[in-house]
Image (cartoon, rainbow, N blue to C red):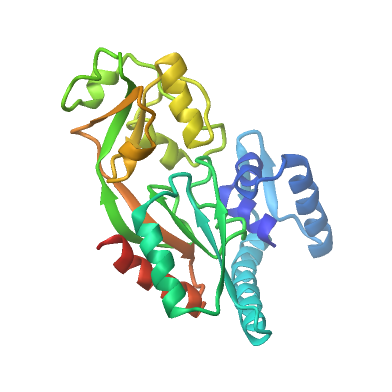
Length: 282
């Protein structure tokens, strides 16, 4: 059902496979098995993508409800067995002081709850939420929010990361137009296009592919590539000495958010988000 919902929401097998962190062939086989079990086609396939059939549209509505019930059932059974827990997805820049305050406050509020943290790379801004790998994500917007609930926790200004010997490194501030002729780092094919467009300053760019923060920094160090980064209070601590961050005056701020699946009424998630709202705005 999770595989089916991913394809139905993406309307593209390649993007759905990327979202689920699996290769495309087993995904295609799983959908064919599901169609055989249902006894009807769920998708109309073409060279440009897929569309839902009427049967597929009915199944999508039921599948979302079924998965929601399954998630709630899992949480209730775990709690009854004394093994209640929460899996939290965290994007690559996990050294945020807000996260440390959140962890301390959540431990005080729920001392018996086991928190499992899944640190994810920059190719999935939902941190495995859509694939059912986490219960709630601490991440950055913007990204495709379909079937998700998103709450803003904080906003950070955005700047460009440059090598110290770059001609632009000594400026107090820059505009995106100052970087028009530069190479930027890219995320792999299949990455959420809204997320990719934001970190490319809203325009198509050319440059090396990266997946994690350290690859971004090395691309700047070795190749003079430029890329954007949030300028939170903690940023200078993780920047190598050879790099500098220069604020951009015409970039919308980066939003730190909590995200979870729409309709998931797990009380542990609600409490987590409420505590996060306070922790990140202190």
